[in-house]
Image (cartoon, rainbow, N blue to C red; front, side):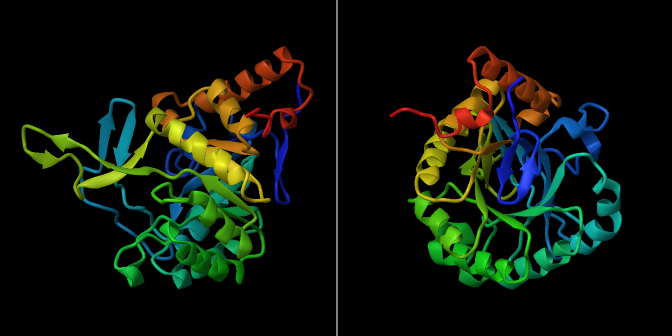
Length: 303
């Protein structure tokens, strides 16, 4: 068997397969279906400083090659997470990471500082695609300055591994990745969802309550691959790739484009055991191609 272990900053992953935030709950919801300790890591659903109800229904719509969602970061806040959820997940035999969101740099920092106190959470993932209430609704992640502000604020209070999740709804994602790296990010993950919409032609209305939502699933994979390749060649920190991954072959494409690890998201809704199948498929492919380690294919794309 090939060695599958990878390292993101100082966090060791037994394999490069991680579940994406918002698609795997807190991991507990999948415990009867998936041996959680076989996963490289689990990124739990988005957590904010305060309780959020999320957007009105309907907030999900199926598309031909994926899905749209505008859930709106529904969660009970970081204090609830620390008090009620953390004790239940801290002893799961894999890396448990928390996705952190906010409405201002101060919100992000305050939420991250609370999670910094949790011994068995080795890393957080900053979702910088949230509305920036100070800038007319613009997402932090669509400008270098906005991304840098959030990373700088969080880095000042958070001393563990800091991953920044990048928005694809930009002109040059590599520049934004570099801005995050300059402010102390230990890794970047990409891509977050693409902005899209769907129409109900009988009602002559959008299918989503707030008109637009995030597009995920197989439709976004070619865009994600291109962006992962561009970012991996622009930064020195590790890149975690995601966007439409539903098979071992998909995962291998991202690894060859320069990703050190990958996340599986929407595919979990289609097949709850997809992560295990991807781990096993990756291992089999490496063996069949005479690879001793997954590191032999990371960034191995020949262009």
